[in-house]
Length: 304
Image (tube, rainbow, N blue to C red; front, side, top):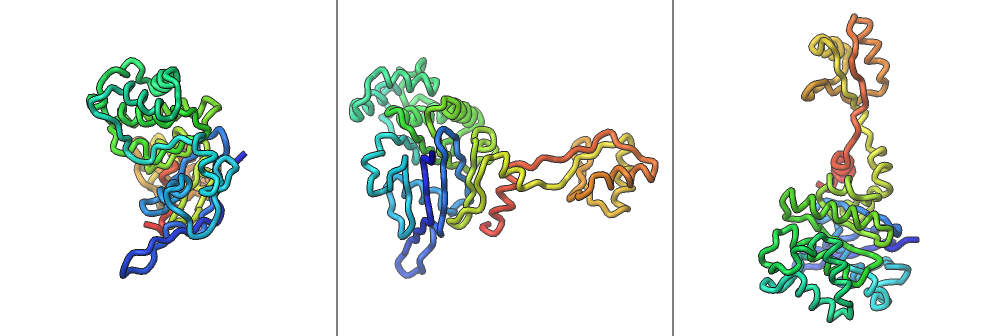
């Protein structure tokens, strides 16, 4: 089942005295249930506009959107209770404790205090729940914001740059939290982020957009496979001799910490044959896996 479906979404912004700027240009997006779905794109690619449109904060020019099988914004009131979102910096009373802040939100939402304690547990803040919010680290503040988004036990959790501005410790805290949410089998997470290594570590699926249109989507492993570099890692008992033989044969090589990187290799056996003919041998020849950052940069190069 698709929790989020976007088809042919167009949205332009008009500013006085300037031509209209396209934020979305026929965007398609599908998010399957019970998955952590990464939503990636360069700044200005349309990620935030998409999320704001899904939540009824802006209206599309043309195209359609569905949340939990309901068309939005027309039937958004019927599903909004099943959606949790953190799309901006969370706002809490600085002098109140984390627990008191959540209790106030829970009272407005008609949620029990037991659920507040459950959410504090989920984000690992129960032991710090009585500390004042203003004394929290940035990572703790962001986790409290996620706890607030979880109060209504949402089917879909939308997180827009949840690690933005955090230090490495805070990023790790949020990363581990998203991993737990994704593994519980209850919540679908739509994660918009520019931290590609984080997306690669926590997401099941990924959608990459550029200039408001889809450029790649699928399971993270499949998207990575589509961007194979063709580069290989080479180690030899005589590194300099191996370099001299291969570059003379037309291979392009660069230095790694303890090996050579041979670029754009279409036939690895040609490397072993060339070295063997020259009396040189290998201790390692292995493909260099592509990372999500490389794929992202290749796919969105025209948008830079």
